[in-house]
Length: 610
Image 1 (tube, rainbow, N blue to C red):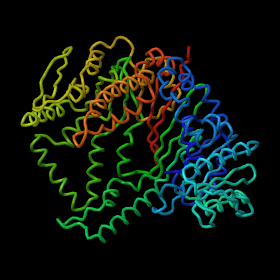
Image 2: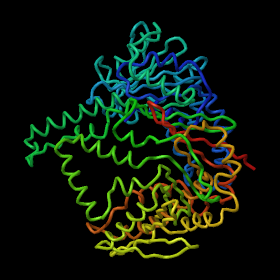
Image 3: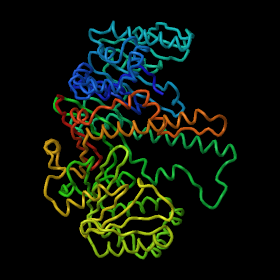
Image 4: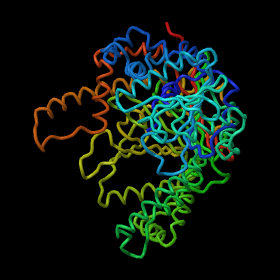
């Protein structure tokens, strides 16, 4: 785990993007050579100012929201403020308020063995006019560490002509560092190893560091893709992570052999690296999240860098075209809707290509395909995937306790698809269950009835309209809404919403996928689901508490989360639908397939609070 100092501040503050600054670009040039991760904020005061103006902050100040979140403040402070007070002496907002400018932190791992509780990292922050206040936070952190371990000692050492404050497990010169800080000009350095502190002191003094590597190139490219890199950045170096992953696999393989647990036979040696190569793990060059918040809009970008013409899993994430038609039959008022371009024939070929990288093992899979096609009565590539165009639609609606989803596929060859669907019905009827046919507004709906009982949440049905193939999961309410609008297209579609129209006008048009979410309803749905799950968990917890011994069942992960959330929120005081709608508008997402990267862009414009 990373040391909870500036790193933790950055992570918590990352939801509060800020305005532009040039200092980060200078610091990126000083990046240590083995950097695998970066967290950066361009300007902390602007970050806090933008947060104050955001509807997220306004929502948290609403009386209904305060009543809902009252349990998390039962001891006077929110959990994050309690952590900051215990660690730095003041709450999160007041602590960050003392930072006058840019912040950056580098996670620097050269060897897999360095992944421990306090992996090597070094951070930089501007301190102009705030050195006294920031050093007070550091001293408070040392006192917090002493409460955890009485052996922690604070000492001063000269490194590169600079006085460095070092907190370590003893006063010995070779004692492992817990944290240390030093000031060079108007910059504070914080590091947890002597090597990184010495390196960064020299780099700042000379304005030169290690030769720029792949990570520096990645950050430059991410800045180009995201039109400036945003005001907050979280970055991971895929190249370095792959190297470390291969080190871990090699170490595990060596230990396996040493323990006499090598593969016993069957002619195949299943090595994890073989599967990594098959999936194209080496093509994931970088992953980054950038964000920016202004008075008029909030945006976030997820960017994945890869080589041109990838052949692994990343190739399946790329859209087949950047020409998009927004289907008018998606009704207004639904929770989420999206449309994307995906060629299923290309996806099928890509999957077979990846399987082919397994060598002799690939035959175990590919030999099964003709046998399956014989049972189905149609060819997967030619008859099923070949009958579909490259337009995919997703619609989801419902409440937090009852949701349904529809997947839609535009049809290219109705005759081929019809034959494939009939073959599928026969195949399923031979042992799994049967499709029950019903009618809705003249459309035939085939609902799968399994031989074993299934609940409504997993109900599956399909409807072939001749132009689109729809697959419904869950209840059929959403499917019925879509079919009703195809039958009678009068009235607005989801795309006609003025807020959505405004969002669409703000993004570049060369996207290969676009989606819209009613953010207010989504927040409401999450709150409803959490309250319902927490209520059920509370009942289970009381029942389980009465049991003793080995018969007592543990809570599921979802129930554990709900139980924890129950300590933060009052389910009986959930804000009204109108309150959620007042503060949260529509969220637009667009996907772009650049030659060397995949970008997912999220955008929302705030709804003015009443």
